Length: 437
Length: 170
Image (cartoon, rainbow over all chains, first blue to last red; front, side, top):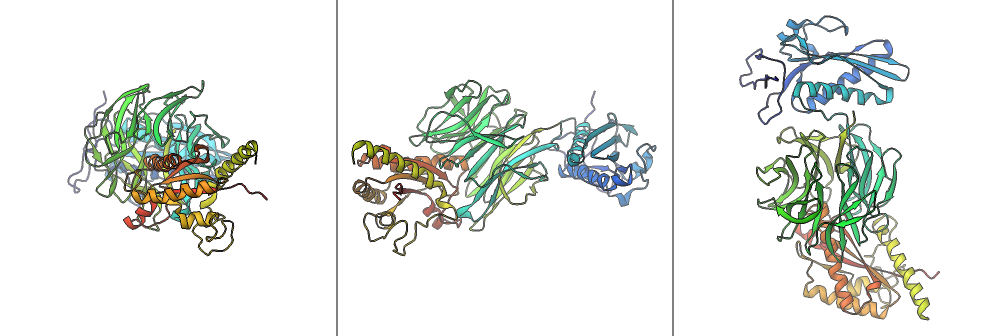
């Protein structure tokens, strides 16, 4: 039913109008290299009090879409027709003439502490609406989420895949010199807005991980003087220590997809293995038992398998085993050292950190280890985390030397669209939470 | 001291070790590299029973090769000195901190630091120090003492540091 790829790759930029012979559809593949042009006239303000809000919401929607690298916003200076009101008939020929393929129109009303956004999305070449008009309501303070939800709708209707804009990222905010770095947990919108700190300066905190529903965060804390796993309720910012199997150190935790179990590394007698703790029963299960280092475990989306890092072969490599432990099969086979594997929410790929010839990379491979692709390269790229739809990877990049600091970046799984994610302080160890709507 | 007092004392010492260890890197910590020879909290470097003497004359740290946790001959000499000192100063407990350089992921380096700290602990225990006096912790690559991104710094950061402490009697 869905006719595919109407967005032609524009080889010749002189072609004024792109051909389209079916409904507008952008198929996200490695082949999409020309962003889809869209027009988004600033949303109509339904009262004087709504003017600024309408502009802000319009800007965030456009930023979400263009930030994907898949869409290109046509500047309003190129518009032939102005869309003065939400109900006004659409002058499709005027939008076709400037090569807008998608048109987003909307209106914003601020009523007391409430914001109401209405929008419609049009397939300009067919001259038809895509999906139905929608109205969204939130408190004034939640206006950015409204904008992200509109952008998620536009993204989903055009690509056929769920979006990722109405999502949050938990990370480690860093300050201070390299030999005395202070680290705090912080949470923010996926685009770096609305930063909130979840911990004070309580000693080192490392590698936070969202629960599948985004209600809890696991992280490693040195507050007691020794690495222990804490679980924090996001709603009331209340941390407590997770009762793990006893050991010298517990670290590198991750939730299962149902949020009921935690897998983590436990060091005893200097040897690090992987354990699983059932949160309801408190039962601890040992999943690996080898004299080598086993760490950085991550569940498959179906909960049946675990990918992890081990140096049992002599150098750190990636392995997959059953969620019950036992035999593991090595999947990494290229030159260099592999770490921090993370299973894609789509189940098809493993993202990882690779270290080779003095450089660090973020890469992806299939779950059988084939089709390895390196997406980035720098002095230090580390700790990939997947967007909720499995299309984008966020990670941190640390610069070299005594003044070296980490910052968050995102990159498409295609390797394109590398972007820094703005944060108020140096930042590391991102964990991308679920879509909230 | 009768044996009960000794046990109580040891518990206090271990607790103190656990409590003071994480703050050593903070702004209010005592500089363990202070070589002024004064009578600070660590005592005089010339007093063989002082922590300052342990840190500087005996040597509080050993270094490791890339990715390794094997003790070198040079490291064993330092640790033999630590064993003698700990034998002569039984009121002190130790936390062995394992560290790694920045070449490697956070998780792997935490595990590697644990291996290094444990290699030192095992050596001290084999040398006759009671296991109950020695704890281990790994900081991975989180607490470099040398901050450049060159081997000259990395070699100093791949270390295990024996941090001794005693309960305050005051």
